[in-house]
Amino acid sequence: MPHIHELYDLTITAFIVHDGKVLLVNHPRYEMWLPVGGHVELDEDPEQALYREIEEESGLEVKILSDEPPVKANDRKFIPTPAYVDVHDANPPHKHINLVYFARALSNKHVLTAEHTDMRWLTPADLEKPEYKLSKSLKFYCREALKAAKT
Image (cartoon, rainbow, N blue to C red; front, side, top):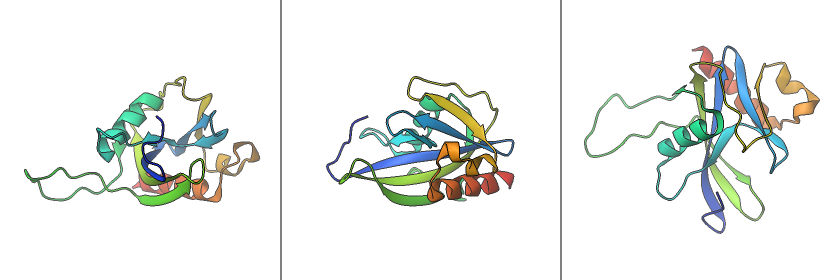
């Protein structure tokens, strides 16, 4: 999806864990290993974008690892709370305000789509391998997702 706004767009990422491994995709546009994710479109809320991106990019069924309010309300929809929020460059000067979610996959049977050139379940040791060229922040998020999935 093209950028919606001139300076900032809202995005989501999902660090999906299964059996002590985290799923990353090789993104051809950025030539990087990244989590599943993308833009929150104008006609959806962050939760809708989260599930849409996970389905479109991996085909996985997941459980989002997020606290939910202990109350039901008719006057609003509660959105799962992201684990983290960050801002990062995306074709400067354009930036993304990114909602970072952690999820547990119900199986490891992902589907490689045309959006990516490869998908892999990485172990904690794989995160340090030079061929993945993971940034410090991506390694941090992967490790935090792995910890969250253990509980």
